[in-house]
Image (cartoon, rainbow, N blue to C red; front, top):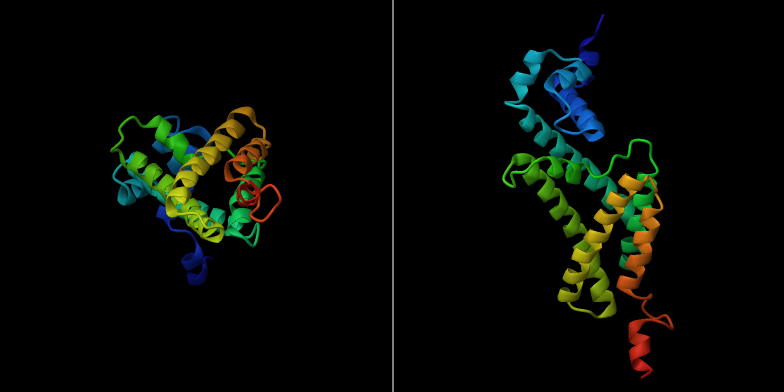
Length: 213
């Protein structure tokens, strides 16, 4: 017999549909995943799908929005724990990515994957994907603003490197997906180290080299 406490703590039909949609679409793609498969995986009735979502695209967009929140919280917290300085945390992002690439359930970036399947730039799925990348860029920019302030550079420096950093991250994700090699993250970090320069105060740092001329 199911108690009221057990019933209250069990996921709702909507949550189960979101869980199923996210898992199936991330592993197999949007177009290859039908509503019937999502309903079957969720263990809900087909009527529940139409009760909560007007279409498969609406379900996919909602699942991606939820994934964005969870993924960004994980990535920001993990990156912040990789070091005590903005520079260390920026470079630490690539070790966080490497561990993700090595996990069994890694299938690339869900948002790049989804955007690649949707041609219409105004489609809600593309909009969610674009917002995710904007959030990721915003976090990178936050760390670069801190780093720029620490080494005496302006916000334009931070903005330029933030955009390039995002390209390194997305490039590493793409290479890791296609090649199956988690080491793509370390290659991206090597490129990032050249982009960002040496540790301020080191014998090879830009400021030290400039002052020795």
